[in-house]
Image (cartoon, rainbow, N blue to C red; front, side, top):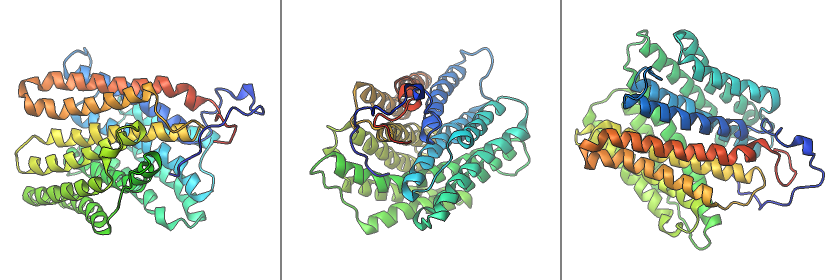
Length: 399
């Protein structure tokens, strides 16, 4: 997404009556707010359930926790980002007002239905959400002949299929382990992050850190993205673990080289930039741990949480902060609130992944501490950005 100019003073023409009524002006506004609130509450409740503190279960097992964080939280952030970015890429309208409300209502219904016995309704509604977003962004992409980004609607449609597969597997209607469906969906999200990270992180680094001079190398780019596609294919075909280990470890090397070329060590003075580099580093860690897990060296949950807490958590929080600031006419600079959020989510990942590896006896406390840190980070985002996301732009522009 393109960098935006610094905020201008509030225009006199901005109507005071409009304050608080901007939530449905652009896709990032409702979905970033919904995602942050849901993420903070869902993880807090899951950690309490996992530790045995809840008298009644919030979710019926780890697969449902994975479902909600992947198909609930992560998909909401992707929807908010793409509904906003596609309008900038194409100069064509994306849903606002009532159509945007309908998309948000569809997402909310999905969160509610998974808590009920209405299994088939939950499956259909949850699968429909990414497909609806695919249509919403596909129409402007097609009108603008923006061929470069045609793959995004396809990936969202694929997410819808995988949601349906996971639900049907949980209902015993589909002969596939539900975790395998979740793993395929994680591979899809990993590919989306690899694509978008490659586009925006070097650009934001160059713009936000003068003299940083991040570089790209064509061979490294092809190897990094190709390895993720190969990993998806290996998971889809259920290839032997030795093959998955080889692909994952090769992918870790390729993504590590990619990150090295972006020169993350030069970004420490710019929190809005270093959080993106830190999140991308978790992709490298995830792939390395994924390879080691396939060789039975470490438990697979550590690899999963390196991706979900470290990479997805860090990258989404960083992009939600940056795009919310940019698209509301605010300076692209982090304050103390944002810095606290970024540190909290990184600590959540470090505790969740490495505390259990280093001290196996600390596994359960690590889950609780990590959950609290994660919930604090996203709860802080919801509180800090509620007024930002619900009020008109400072510069009086539309959006």
